[in-house]
Amino acid sequence: MIIQPKTRGFICTTAHPEGCGKQVQAQINYVKQQPAVSGPKNVLVVGASTGYGLASRIVSAFGAKANTIGVYFDKAAEGARTATAGWYNSAAFEAAAAQEGLKSYSIVGDAFSDEIKNKTIDLIKTELGKVDLIVYSVASPRRVHPKTGEVFSSVIKPLHSTYTNKTVNFHTGEVTEATIEPATEDELRQTIAVMGGEDWKMWIDALKAADALTEDATTVAYSYIGPEITHAVYHDGTIGAAKNDLQQTADVLHEQLQQTGGRAYISVNKALVTQSSSAIPVVPLYISALYKVMKEAGTHEGCIEQMYRLFSERLYIQGEIPVDDKRQIRIDDLEMRPEIQEAVSKTWEALATENVYELTDLEGYRNEFFGLFGFNVEGIDYEADVDPNVEITNLK
Image (cartoon, rainbow, N blue to C red; front, side):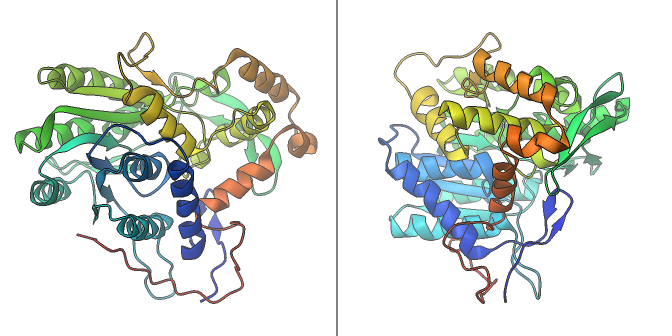
């Protein structure tokens, strides 16, 4: 079939297998061109098919030559429907890993469920013995609690008061104002249940109980803080409250793992175009302004550059890992440089529909958004007939 992008708001409902594959290969090529990472040997990535999770798996496999297991919730092609982008990404990863002689496995299912946890632990015990790095990179709007069966849904809202700021329709370039009403107490509770640290801790507890962790195991989860511009809807909103819960979980896990020489961290990463960030009002416009400033400064990074730097300059260095006063690893350091934020703030004040393409890299944002689904990738013929049915090798 000929596969073209079909969008519904901030979601693309189609994905292109060749485009996704080429993007994955580009990330692999980047890592292989860098100095090797001296670090993990057996890695579990929970949320491994897109964004920072996928990049973490690529750095582990092709930078550190580690064996990897990726857990993710994606769907194969069916009838006239293409597979999800994460499915095509993972198929490309597994094929490339096999070519390099790397041991890798994929488990597709609900990472929040006991069933998938148990299935993953069985695979670890059978194929790897134990894991020494667990990356937790789950981004989901919904969670079914494995013990109670309660269904939680997350919301992206401010707390306490109504929030109004500029936003952009990145498809049309129209800059408008978005107004978001504050979350209720129950919406806050549910958002923390979905995006907080409970499930991360359940994974580590289950792995530890099954003796599937090495004594010096490291675990890391990902977060974002960002600038004042986005704080009301992000850092100081429902998501920020969930991320605070994630940090508290990191501290509890760190204390537990340290007893045998292990450790747990939150890595605060840079703002990037992801399916999740595209859904947050204000954020796409901020990212578009940020991209222009950082590209002009020569400091722009994508997911793969960020994760390579996390592994090679933070997690796996000799000596103490540099952290902030909350014990967080700050890979957003280039984004948060005062001169960068000052330039973005100056741009923000002037932004309007008439000048959005001049003052920001909205075109770059849009290209990256479609790139998440394998579109707008250089060298791909999107008028050519392509088979949407792609198998994932080593799918368990």
